[in-house]
Image (tube, rainbow, N blue to C red):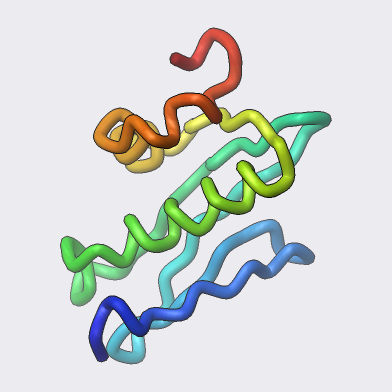
Amino acid sequence: MNLDQLQVRHNQAAQRFETAFDGYPALLVYHRAPGLLSLDHTEVPPPIARQGVAAKLTQAALEFARAEQLRVVPACSYAAAYIRKHPEYQDLLAPGKR
């Protein structure tokens, strides 16, 4: 599968973004608070690590936060690093998280 074709599903009931790549499931778990979206944990199995799957999940979560006008708390170290590398998402950071 080509990474550009990767579909990310927003499972609101489970509070996570999900996908599968080469048959392996991957996810980004979050929780909401009033006006906030906390990105808590990104889980990508070793066989598909370092192929951009976590980036796709994080981008989907950040685009959701933007659409919902939520501030982001990058509790997950991967999400924090992704936002540092992508200045177009810096404006989403909650006060004190910039």
